[in-house]
Image: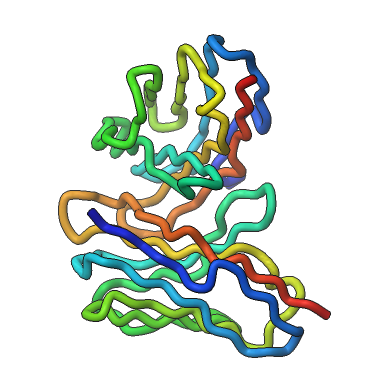
Length: 114
Length: 112
């Protein structure tokens, strides 16, 4: 059974700092990995999707990397802003037998302070 | 498109009552998912549909839970009878084949 772990569970940084969020998964037979953002009381917003054949994806100040063989992904946020404060979740979909279903990590709660 | 639309946003019900949650996916998306989020267990997949057909319901916790998708634009998740431990936020999401998900805003269910 796939298990997804995110470290740290919570993180507080001053504005402007670059930061890295970590995600690890136990079964490397994945189809893709996605990073989501969840604001309090809201749904999830997809940030980046990395196919299993890719090594990284970038969108603005966000960069996600994937090392499938070691079961790890990182989300790099450059020049953090208070508006980045949210919970960040990673999720993987299986290579076979699972269609498009995702297994989620428990998230990293980020607070960017002024 | 207005995105994935869920209703109601909040539901408070008494133990033993029937609860029905509703979802309208994005037009053209062929996958629909129901997830449950709790502090203890995080986000859990309950069931998903492909082209209106249930594909995997192994995450449905008990027979008290049922889900239907009568057409491409509507799905329901029903709990009967409801119990306090069903209290959670229930999310519906849709996707187009293997592309990224779009989540609804969720229904916060409280069973007292």
